[in-house]
Image (cartoon, rainbow, N blue to C red):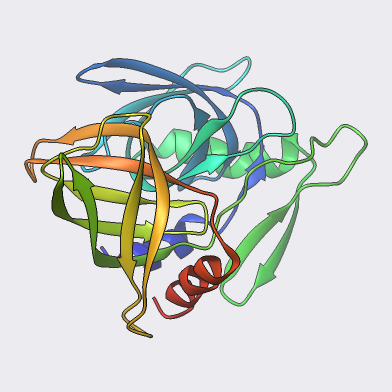
Amino acid sequence: MDTLKSLKRHHRARTEVRWEVSFITPQGKIDGETVNISSEGVMVSCQELPPLEDNFRMLIKPPNHYPIDITGRVVWTTICNPVSGAETIGVDVQFMSIPERDRLFLQSMIPEQFGGKMREIGNQQMVQPEVSAETEPGLPSTPHIAEVSLPVYYNRGGKTVKATGSRFSTKGCHLYTKLAPPSGTVFSLKVKNPQTGRSIQVDSSVVQCKRCVVKNQWGMLLRFMNLSGPDREEIQQILQHD
């Protein structure tokens, strides 16, 4: 399935809710909290990445309701900068398999329970939650992400390592490589803009790292650090031409 089409379909109806979530992975359970949800997908705030390449089981726990057992897949990830508290990872998940009764529950309960008003935009429906004094500010939303794959380079042990960068934003990107940089270290990532031919060097650090068994690579979420104005503009050009 085309990722961009999937992402657009995935965001047809969203409303902000805070429900407990658990990702069930071969390495154990990852706990998080929903940020917004629809009958087709959910954004989760958590401290650790679920698998990046495979489907996984997840449990969503609405209040006064049995846990909803769903099979999901990561669409994109980003770094959340909350108003207060620790920095977290935002993980947007597309539902690959959900029982029909649970899909209907989400469709029927979310607008009604949280005061959302449905409006149509073209062939899509969007949930507009009513604004109130209790609405929490600063909740992360869908970032502008370029679904492109570009060759990138970094140094490890005095040697230049070629890798693949994807899902670029001005906050960071995904990196797939056979030789992973140590987690938490800062290194320089060379990115070439295919539109302009210009290369930029971006200070980056590894936020999370996962072994991708199918591709026999490491998949990592990188954070861009101290991004200069010209480098930010170069990345924005990549975003505009994906």
